[in-house]
Length: 476
Ligand code: UGA
Image 1 (cartoon, protein in one colour):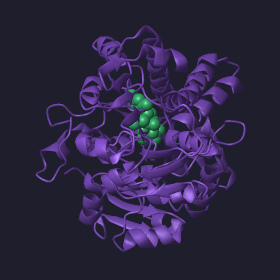
Image 2: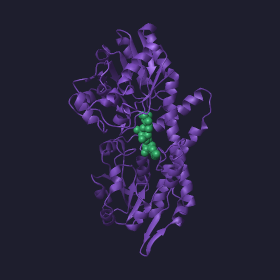
Image 3: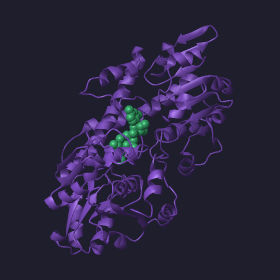
Image 4: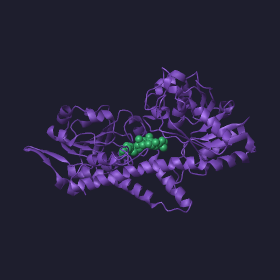
């Protein structure tokens, strides 16, 4: 493959670790550095700190070869031509992104700088962060000619991050100097030239030699804004379809049919139109708030984003009310919960809508047995312990003798349950599905009372199946 670039990645979280292994996968020499000694020890010894498809294979392939781990930033960046900063930018009390980790890393990089390097923001940061990083480095006595700061936002989704990295829709590089732009072009050349896809060992996906990903060169500020605007737009799409789902419930229509009809219009597109219990995760809630804050600071009113947040908060409450409408009262009811992660395919529980719903149900006096294929350990760390909340290790153990089953994350396994077994395992055959994983007609034919989001509820009765619009009216 083309000339390898020496890269340091600072931060071994979801973005940093995936970026580091994928840079190694496309031929570069990479050191991933983090000040968390336990995590680096784990990675050095073959451990894997997060649940992410293909990450174990890639780590096994490159660890101790093209990919090394370190806790020493100075040593790790010594030979690097590009330093990617992928540290956390959590939400501060004002809604703004807390950039103290970025600031601290910028100072540390400045103190370690031994020759020209490009410092690349990979974390999601507000517009102007680039300039602040530059100023911080200059304040530490480094000449402008000794470094450049660039922005290279990441568009990975947790759960599919490796394939998203290797088969991106686009690569965005914000660079204000030709020298920095050239280096970043070289970093991504194995993908943009299509070379990577010709290797026998490459992971298959949507891109190929004939159809490689485009690289978009912009100013650093535009690149920073592209990231925030993209996440805010996707969150808006989800809130939009959730609002439409609520109209569908009132009008007796199916939101899936409506979303299909909308999504076939290429200008709208079919993705991110799945109605549910609202978006969660470490990105959308934080980034919508941060983008709103950025707009405000720049004197622009962006009230649309307030509405996006409001619809998202309401969606969880509506689901809770839907559970009430199916159970009548809560105290003493035993519920099965499938899904703790903020979505299927990940062990991440940050800002998980499932948590908000579980907390409301526990507060009302329900007891809960919860199952998640990967997020149980993290849930135990994050949810306050309660004698009313038990974690089990299979879906039928959760369902055993429960008054109803709730589906809160869209793990594919949850859409493939043995419905006959589920029916006799539950005390009452009631399924309340926050992710629309089943076909209401099929659930009705199997004898379930089935409530979902933006679709007619079905009620199984002794005389057969009843479409239940009265039920819907009660929950509005
Ligand atoms: C999101 C973006 O999709 C990535 O492009 C971006 O790189 C990433 O944030 C980031 O900024 O780091 P992620 O948070 O991993 O990725 O997850 P998504 O797949 O986008 O889902 C976010 C939330 O929206 C989840 O709770 C999911 O269940 C929900 N969602 C998603 C819906 O409710 N409906 C949909 O149609 C799609």
